[in-house]
Image (tube, rainbow, N blue to C red; front, side, top):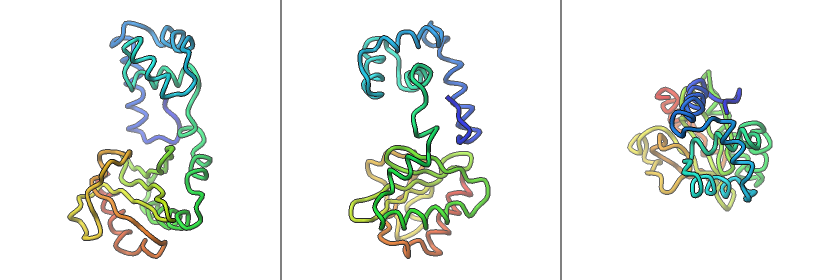
Length: 190
């Protein structure tokens, strides 16, 4: 499942998942692909659930099998399209563009996309952003909430558990020197 827009660490992790599939399940990847192609479900979540319920295949191996059986998800192969679809509101898009510029200031930053958020990584993820109704943006950071009075502990976020703090940004002007310093601190720890 490794793709060129993954960090070296992420590529190694995906390779280890693939390498452990036969050892952990007793079936080769080709055997699992044959099974997956027999799945009556069409949506990825439903296919993953079917593999788990009917064959005991868990999340990481299931995603590897589905990737091999049906191709990559757009999150890995077409991040620009996913980002464009995610950031459609003009107000939240302008905040996103300001965060993106600040997040990319340090060297060696990799931007990745998911269905519900955009993330920035060095060796590991150090920041993520998701749009919020009303033209706002929620920024998650790999720093502790006590790093700034603007930060709070995340609640029910789908991004990496490494992101220990979040802040709501309501305009591009909110991406100020303090937010840039927090992004740099998060990057330093990644």
